[in-house]
Length: 221
Image 1 (cartoon, rainbow, N blue to C red):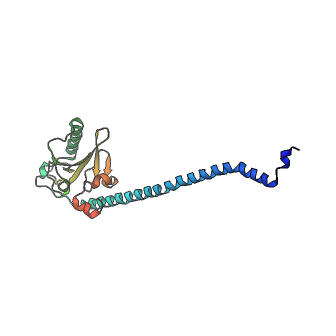
Image 2 (tube, helix red, strand yellow; image 1 turned 30 degrees about the horizontal axis):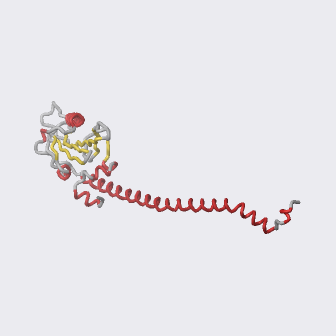
Image 3 (tube, rainbow, N blue to C red; image 1 turned 180 degrees about the vertical axis):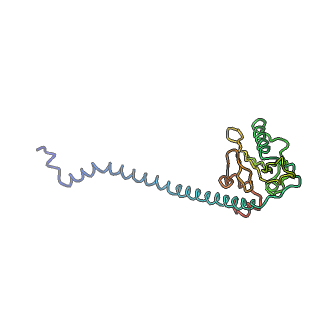
């Protein structure tokens, strides 16, 4: 037996074994600390992200509730304008709005015969027959007019009583700068012949079009 082996005691053996595993254990310990520190930084961020998402959801729900409440107000019967004979038919109104969309995509401007108003005037109910009104917020435009859904009877001795309906189109400019038209479904609304959209389904967009009183009642900003 080699001489140096006689000098190795049991304590020496244990010490040598600890020295052999000390470095790997140290590496593992440092790695565990670093991993723990990394995940501890993620926890506050994840909690904050959840809080932000929940806050946004509450805000959007408040906007949607305000829109739904305002839509109920529009269920009141429409008042027949004094110049009811000038009411366009549903077909004529649809043709007019198609021309508006074409003009926007061609020149970027609304036709001059579209009367621009603020959102208060747009919804106040004083629309005149034969006049189309517009209100704009950023990349979205609402255009509305009254149309007559009644079909004239050529054999009738008297004029057919007009059947009033709101015809409202939502125009939206996309990221490609192309304007697209959607039929906004409303109480007493005219039938939709193009893509139909409900106000409560686009709360962030439609909330900005509500009258001041409706937004104040809704509580959202």
